[in-house]
Length: 407
Image (cartoon, rainbow, N blue to C red; front, top):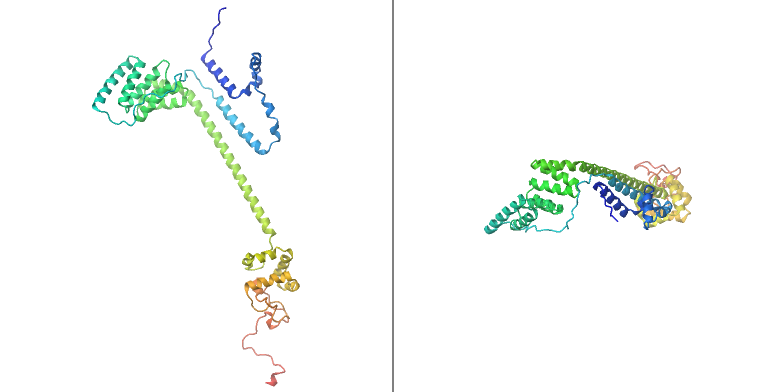
């Protein structure tokens, strides 16, 4: 039976390879309705398909909001991957590198000088290598350039020429070419040939952005028609990739801005909550209004404990509003204990103003008038001299009494 043979266009093969790679990384794509014909074909060949994604996507509906945020992130990642797959590049001419990526002789980078004998040997090897290069004997030229590089590892021209030979081999070795040309550029940043052939090697590897940059640099240093022709080949793909990169960066910037705004919003809410709690805590504390400079007294643990008693706090507020109301609490041991405590903190000053008819005031309560701030009113009618009223001016005539005649 005669065998049938046919060949597909390279572009079609590249697309098929890309589809197979997608199936390997995301096998669930086989359940897409548009690919039902392909799934049926696989099943007919005895293949087994992965489970449908719907089997594992029904439960997340009851998850917490944090899970929703994670789902948004995964959706964003899928969107980026989708965008990358949407970049359609012309892969014609991309061959990759079929050669094993093995390091080759690069000489001793620490060698700085050559002996006279080495200089003579280097000149001989360089001449032989250039002769083989001009005759198109690429394998032979690679060997001779390698011998020259061993003698003089600081020659940018030798690395550039050997890199060119790697590109001329069959099959080409673009990765080796990139290594040699990169070394040549390290030794001489103005070596246009090294940029030119490194750009060509990157183009064969499908690295269009790097290729465009190298070829453009080569033309700037020393314009070359071939380099310019190669540059025009890679520019369409390079522009697509540059636009795609700008789009990714813009989306990343927008996402970062959104995240920063969300963090700022949460921080603001936390500050407002803390301020509200502090205000509520302050509202629950005893009202210290009208108490003048007594704030420092409440650092005393015993006084703080006393004010935690609602009865004492209410009584103190009542006395603060009208000092004369202290009379109502003279038989309340808890209130009077607090008053005496405060009096001992500030020291005695005679009687309690406003307590008319009570000479000398309350024992041990001297100075409370000044301590309560607004509690220091004038003495009431009939207040005795010891009641904290204003003493008579010095030298004033004392009214006559019935005992004056006895003196």
